[in-house]
Image 1 (cartoon, helix red, strand yellow):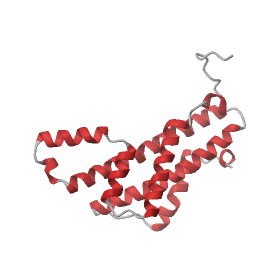
Image 2: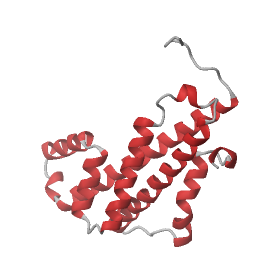
Image 3: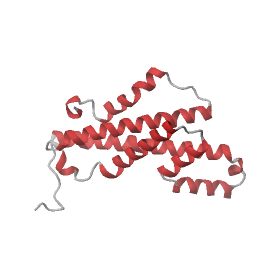
Image 4: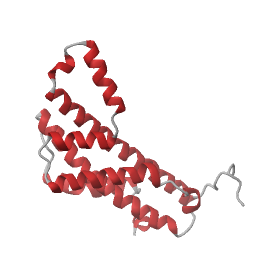
Length: 176
């Protein structure tokens, strides 16, 4: 039986795997932050009284701190004309983020040195693409509210795959 205090051996595969998990978690966290920011922007635009007093502002800031990803997405969905396809993309993004944040590292010590690592990395790549697709929607909605220019269609269409390549270190052999 392995000791719970035993640290895994450092190998080329484990270092690549931990780097992939770290970048996946960083990107998933960025998506969650973008959702919170957009939900907060919607709140501010819909309630100018937030800035009327220090108490109102502090109450608003406290509510932002307590807001989780699902709360943020629900606020966005009810405030902005969501179509069924947008709602589905945001749901998939939330579920993919939850997988990255809560499930992807379960049993990871044993995964990076066997055949399961390719399966895990392939799954992380798929989840990151789902998060990136949802993140595009969140960012564009924010740009729409703030009147910022939207990137070109060619940039947006290649963005999810570019994020996945960055997360997975561009190692085709690890993701196929």
